[in-house]
Amino acid sequence: MAKGPVVTRRNTFFARWVGWVSLGESLGFLAPVLAQSVPVAPGPAAAVPLLVLAGLVEGAVLGWFQVRVLRTTLPGVSVLRWVLLTAAAAVVAWTVALLTFSNEGWQGWPAPAQAATGAVAAVVILVSIGLAQWFELRHHVPRAWRWVAGSAAAWTAGLGVFMAVATPLWQPGQDVWLVAAIGAGAAVLMAVAMAAVTGLVMVRLLPKT
Image (cartoon, rainbow, N blue to C red):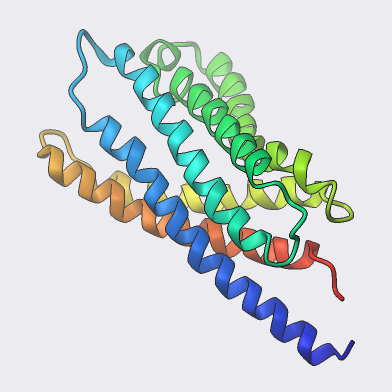
């Protein structure tokens, strides 16, 4: 097959992937944003199950938007398995994040223990979705392990963008609507960054014919 049509098809896939996956993650992340805006008694620890559930919703929505694009080139990919694997991985990522970086007890640990567990937690969070999706993707493309590394790089970029935007804008005492609006806006930028990197990786994994 001529190189031109292959390049055109890959560019079309990339554009479609970035557009739909950005939308999917932006919509999915509204669940955690809204969950964090809900007053929960008796304390912050009680919000953990709610946020984990919101993470499940986020993962399921993201997975569905991803696989609807992926199946245009790889029709054999299972929608159900992809969505379930992505949702389960999001639950793992949110649980680990909440038990470490958002946990006041962990923040009081000695610096060496905090650094060691934080590093492990970060690795788990970044690779969780790509690793889970690899279990399905490996049946459809060669060297699918590259997706794990590529997905981790994408989430590193996305979360970096989110923190760079949201952290300086979030201030103590802000109204709930403003906190949610900042989170939603930062989430859109995070989603675009993540979608662009994963799109570049996926394009290189897809068959060339």
